Structure formats: C-alpha cells, structure tokens
Amino acid sequence: MTSFTEENYLKIIYKLSAETDSEVSTNAVAELTLTKAASVSDMLRKLSEKQLVNYQKYQGVRLTELGEAVALKVIRKHRLWEVFLVEKLGFNWDEVHEIAEQLEHIDSEELVERLDEFLGFPKFDPHGDPIPDTFGIMPELRYQNLSEITVGQSVVMVGVSEHSATFLQYLAKMGLTLGCHIVVKELNDFDKSLNVKLGDLSNHFISHEVAKNLLVKSVKN
Amino acid sequence: MTSFTEENYLKIIYKLSAETDSEVSTNAVAELTLTKAASVSDMLRKLSEKQLVNYQKYQGVRLTELGEAVALKVIRKHRLWEVFLVEKLGFNWDEVHEIAEQLEHIDSEELVERLDEFLGFPKFDPHGDPIPDTFGIMPELRYQNLSEITVGQSVVMVGVSEHSATFLQYLAKMGLTLGCHIVVKELNDFDKSLNVKLGDLSNHFISHEVAKNLLVKSVKN
DNA sequence: ATTAAATTTTAGATTAATCTAAAAAAATAT
DNA sequence: ATATTTTTTTAGATTAATCTAAAATTTAAT
Ligand SMILES: [Mn+2]
Ligand SMILES: [Mn+2]
Ligand SMILES: [Mn+2]
Ligand SMILES: [Mn+2]
Image (cartoon, rainbow over all chains, first blue to last red; front, side, top):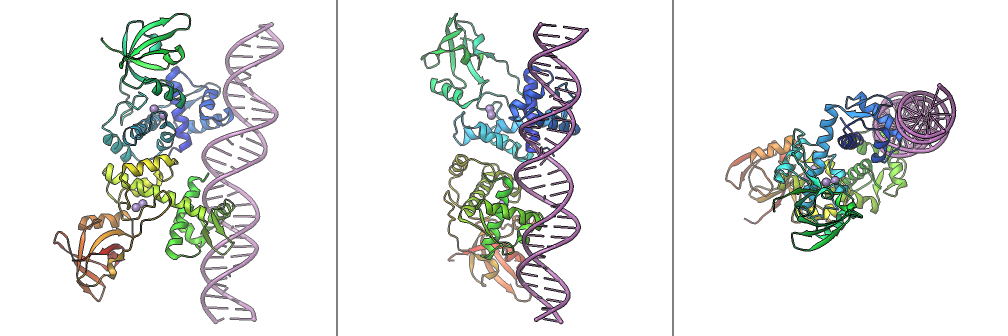
C-alpha cells in the first residue's frame, strides 16, 4: 500500500509538523529526505492523491489523519526495534538508528505486537523518545531542557533531542545515560555553560549547546 | 551494493542450482521470482556484469563464488530470523516464512552476528533447514525421506522439504513436529502409504505424498 | 535433415523515484 | 509599488525493474 519511500516522507513530514505545528515546506522535507525540492513536489502530489497529506501548491503540506496514522506506525516500529537492539542484542544507543531505519519498514502487524510484548511494552526508546501504542497514542511526557534548569535543582535525564552518533558517544563517555541524576551546581553567565554533579558524585562541565539537547525531568531532592 | 531484488534472484538461483546441480534455466527462475522470462533475461545480464553469476545466452546460469556468498548470507539471515520469530516471539512454524522474506534483506553484519549469538548459534531453522555460518558453511546433515524408510525402522523427524502453511499446519495437527520419534509399522504397497507410531504412542496414517516431504534421521532403537 | 515446438532473448513501453534546468509564484527589500 | 531574491513547481531525462509482443535460438519430432 505505502512504499518504503512514501513511509519515509510521511515520517519526516510528521516530525517537522510536530516541531512547528504548522504547514511543512517543500524545502524542509527535501533537506531531511536528502532529495531535491523538485522530487518532493512530485511526491507530495502523489501522497495527496492517496489521501495521505493535505497539500495545496505553494502552501506547504500537512498529514491527514490517515497519513498521521501511517507515520505513527512507522515511528512505533522504529522505536520498538531500537529497544530490541539495545536491550536484547546489546547494541549501544549510538549504533541502532541506522538499523532501525531499515527495520521500521517491515510490514507485519502481528510482528509488531509480538515484539512489543516480548520487550515488555516499553514506553520509551533508548534515547528517551516516547513509543506510540497500537492506536498511535503517545505516552504523556513533560520534560524540560537541561538548559532551562535553575541552579540548585535536581533532575533526572529522560532523553536527548539530538541523535547523532558523535553526540551520543560523547554523553556516554561523560557518564550521561538515561536515568542518571544531575544537580545543577553553577551557571556560567557569559556562555550559559553549566557545572553539574552526577549521581555518582562526579563533577562535570556541560556546554550550553549540549545542555539544550538533554531532556530532563525535575525530581524532589 | 546488491538490491533487494537482486538478492532474491541470487537466492532463487542458489536453490534451483542446489537441487539440480547444473545450470539453471531462465524459465525456472521466472517461475520462482513470479516474473516473466523476459525480465529474468534482463536481470541475468545485469547480475553477470556484476560478476555475481556466470551466464551465457541460451545456456542457463550459475552463481559465481561471489554470488553464492551473497546468496548464503541472505539464506543465513532468513533462517536466523525464522528461529527468532518462533523461539522468541512465539510464532508457529507456518507463520514465519513471509516475514522472514522481508527481514532477510536487512543489511547489517553486526546485527546478524549478534542475533545469531542471542539465539544461541542455532544450526537449524524451525523447518529443519540448515543455517550457514558466518563463512557460508552449512552444518552437515544426512537425512532421508520418510518414504525411503523400511518397516520396523525407528527415526526422528529432522525437517520438511515442503514449506507451505497448509502442509505445516497439517503436520502440527497430526503431532508431527521436529524432533518427534516415528516408527514405521506398515507399508501399504498399493499406494505406498504408511502406518506409523509416534513417540507419544499414537498411531497415524501417512500418505506417500506426505512421507516424501518429511526428512528423518534413523535412530538406534 | 527438415519441420515444428518450446525456450530464450531483444525491442519497445511503463511505473516509481529521482535528477537538472527553466518557469512560475511568493516573500523580501528597496 | 517595483524590483530582487527565494521558494516552489513544471518540463524533460535517467535508472531500476517490470511487462507484452516479436525475433532468435535451441530442442524435439517427424
Ligand atoms: Mn532512531
Ligand atoms: Mn530513538
Ligand atoms: Mn522460510
Ligand atoms: Mn525455514
């Protein structure tokens, strides 16, 4: 029904749409699909014919309910497979994205449901991203960026908003893993960098650039 | 490097070649790929350019060493995923082939090796088919068809040579699963059908058609 | 050895997904 | 309000995989 390629477009439109909560531009899609704007225009016309997106020439694109349902299924599969790769096969969190990009297109409802059960119905993937359920419903999550946390607050790390292997490896080396406790000790005004203490009592310096990409939940200390 | 489609051609040429141990005809490939002979001719020319097959117009096709290595990797993945689906996710043996047809094309050496380890380095898939190792080496297996077994002999079921869901479901209903013990009690000459006793002492009637597709290993009683 | 039948290959089209270059529309700047 | 720049769409090609119909080759049968 929906090809590998179409699924990738829908997933990308979903992500961009969630970020801005408005119509998505042709160029934005082209950037993430690693194609040219001309190719995107063509595909949007085609997705529109299939009722997967609402698309008016020059006016950007949005997913229809149907399109969003397809996108959420793909995202569900991507994140469940990432959990499998990390929890069951022992991959590191920076190694699983590319493989999950392939596995997310395997077409079998039965497989997804059984995998979900096998993994113990996880609510979040190895990067802290929420996993939609069978009906496409995301678990509620209210997190903040570490960069918004005030001095003295104690938080626990629940996710990352940047998924590049280099970033994830850097975090792992620092001891910054999902679930770790962080206390903000100092905010250096001139560059907004932070001095923090982790659960293991080690002290670290965190640049604003890094802090912006760490998702945390405050915790009573 | 090798596309989904090319991998399927190689796998099919491997199978046909193993059966007849000689050149494979264009029509035979067309039948299994569910395409037309014209399409196959085209693809054979292309695979030949890529050094994956030896192909002379009108003379049939054979895999090169390279082509065979690729085919064996695909077969290895197919069978490992089938073990995963049955052993870990609880699928029945008649439900896994179609899903494995998709999973076998996932491209990650690391994934295959870790999956193999996770499964405990199985030597046979849920249908008794041998799983090639990383180097493409198949475990040795010397089996016979149940139809070749003489009255009085005791055997253990080690595989099937027919993989259709209906056949597999029929066997399951009869209690004929991999590893089950079978004693041939009677051979009915007129239609070569068999009366057998299973390990659980139940008696069954097995047609010649079915017996031909059951792979067994004789066992000292 | 011819002829007939079956198999296989080529020729020419089609579909999906992509591209470059040019045209059209929208957004921005003077 | 016009002109300039940016964005988006169309037009025309390309590549992979497929098809049908026709031509070529091989195999089988007189
Ligand atoms: Mn990912
Ligand atoms: Mn993830
Ligand atoms: Mn199979
Ligand atoms: Mn099998």
